Length: 458
Image (tube, rainbow, N blue to C red):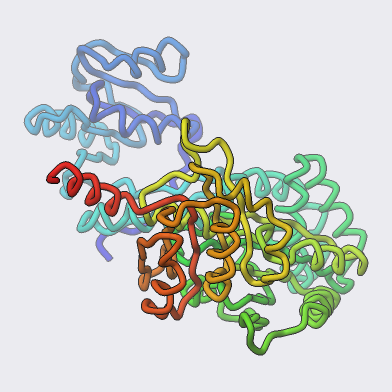
């Protein structure tokens, strides 16, 4: 390890920057987050530098740095974007006894790492200057894991630290873990005062058993990168993860290793967990004081039996939250390059489930058969023949376009372009194994383009 990572206290100390252009602006954005006294030397300063000077956030000296300008400085930055001028500025800084950073030059006395800022929580990522792109990637990954308001929680906790100094170390650790990873984030959604109240309640409870909590979380259509930041954080914090069949294995893997993972998958027209048993499992897990994530493919509020599970949790007096996810209809539309609504074609669209054929009888089939109508049909493969018959009976065109998307957003994604009259046969020939989304009234953009080219050729 060539560079030793430290956090330097810059409160009230001088930091001198040679250069006032674009190169310096990039460094100043981070330096302005500190409590340092900043002096910037350079001609033709950038507009942002002039603005910061006008606001009193730094001192702007409209000339190149000169001997004596760095006297008493803790740090010096050579950020002129000119090798000769940077070398001259570095020599002045070192002569004054300051540690000097020359931008993009590993001969510097120190380097500035990539920073994840959740003030007062900060994470620094360094690669010894060998792979800045890798450092930025790691930064993005860490930022996705840390809630945007983590710093607010940390400041609230910091002000409370003296109140728990009398507790033994093990009890103190449990206290802060419950605040930062259980009670605090939930309470903070209602405001800082609520988070402060949560601390008071935790202290009053002492080391009593934890209260369980249930998060109903949307796992999205399968691509881990389509998982929301909040869902990813809750997975990492969960004690128990109870997931359905549609939650992708790559997403379940994001749960922390110590978590208990329970599958309660329901197989269409096959063996399934009873809903009452799922409800009982969720409630029992939370009653043991666990932080429970009930992970549902897509969005939990779209054909996810959410209301039934929420009612069971509410009846048990257990707290809960709902975290929406990207639903399969949106992923399917993205896969075919289409929007679900379009001006002049349709101002609304229907969302149906083909799992229960009896429920189809309740649909407004005449409206669904109307030219330009669009609908997303979940779990519709086995109901394709019934679906075709109902639509044709109510006036739908036999050549109504239909797009079938298997495993939308996942590595095994397949897109099938067909028509209403051919739908059952096309699905039988494709023999899909993964979940399929049917989009009525829509065809893949590539298929539409090919058809247009054929018409033009004829």
